[in-house]
Length: 204
Image (cartoon, rainbow, N blue to C red; front, side):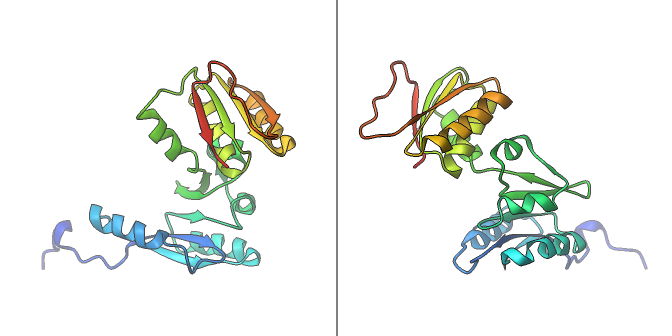
C-alpha cells in the first residue's frame, strides 16, 4: 500500500511551547498565543505552567527532555533561569534577564523581548539612531528599553530615577557595553528636560 502524501498524513504531535511562572493562574498568555497559532495555521500548543522557584531547574530540564521548542519566563524566574541555559542573546546579556527561551540546535538560548516591542513601535514614528533620549525610571522596563535603544544606535540616554544608584547601574552597563553615551540623575520634585531632548520615555 502506498504511503499517503505529507499533506494527508495525520499528525498528533504538535510542537510544544509554554510559560513558566508563579503564580500562573491569571496569566492570559496561553489564550493569546494559542489563538495566534490557530490563526496562522501553526501546529503547536502553548502550556501555561505553575513553576515555583525550587522547581525551575527541573522544569527547564523537563522541557528539554520532551522536545519543547521554547518557553517564556515570567516572575520570579527571569534572572534565575540564566543558570540553566546554554547562552544568551545580546540584549538579554546586557539586561541581565530573560523572558523568552528558544531551542536553537539543541541549545537553550535566552532572549529578552521586553524592549523590542517598544523599539518596533518607536520606529514607526522616529528612527532612534543618534537621537537623545530621557528615560524616567530604572526598573526592568527602563533597563530593557535603554538596552534596545543603545543597540539601535541611540546617541545618548539620560536615566532619571528616585534611586540614583539604580539609574547609574543601567547607565554604566550602557556606557561600558555599547557605543551609546549614558548618564543618570536623581529625580527630586519636578524634572526639567535637557534642551534638545528628542524623545521622553516614561518607564515608571
